[in-house]
Image 1: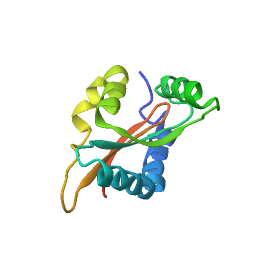
Image 2 (image 1 turned 135 degrees about the vertical axis):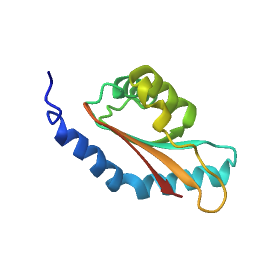
Image 3 (image 1 turned 45 degrees about the vertical axis):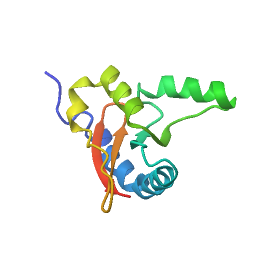
Image 4 (image 1 turned 90 degrees about the horizontal axis):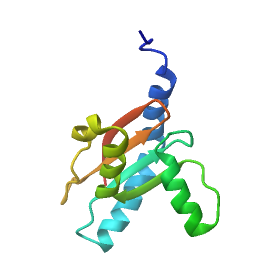
Length: 123
């Protein structure tokens, strides 16, 4: 039997990542939606050692020629759904829908090596 507190530090880190980056992600999402009203943005935070980061790292390095560690990025909802579907399909129901109009909410996802956390922020 595994210890339920074995990865407690990473679970805590996922909360910290959301708190640390929510304002930046909300600002970036607002800029995207202002230019593209139909956009369905999701804020994604990936720690460098999260298994989900390898495909994104490879794609970014191919495009920029630079090495990337973790990511703090706003992506289209369909890409985030693909990441979750491939790596944690049991979590798909926890991703908030993107809301529009006054009081719109931006869904957020923070992924560490052994932790996954969802939130939403006004943007």
